[in-house]
Length: 155
Ligand SMILES: [Zn+2]
Image 1 (cartoon, rainbow, N blue to C red):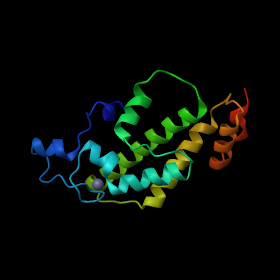
Image 2: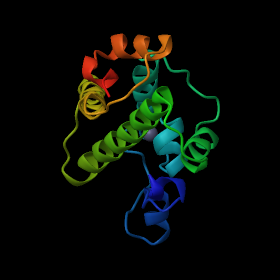
Image 3: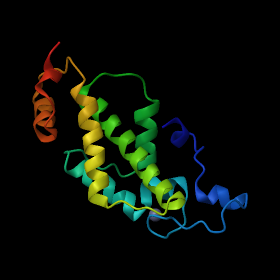
Image 4: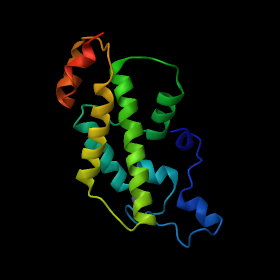
């Protein structure tokens, strides 16, 4: 996440400048690749976000990069929906980045539904280990939607 927030990822637009690659086409959709394109405006990534966020009752922000900066830069808080949202975002970014690398370096590609299922599984496994979530209505709804373990409400 730090690499993403600080614009340090080696996306193809940067590699092209240094002649590491001979084109800057996005392997996910064919458009020009840059950090902003890859994670925000790319049609493939947008679909991942839509599926992850809609099915999980989160709203899609109008301006992704600003929202991300805010979530990652703004101070600490242990609010469950927010912790979950951060985890979903970082898992999705990781999955999009891995998929992009697999397509470039191994010529393998995974279907959208598998990627979404994979992100969901990662998030669920991580959250099931959390404890002490407060029993608010919003948290219960998230618990039901995601199918988390009841033990997240234990102390
Ligand atoms: Zn793309």
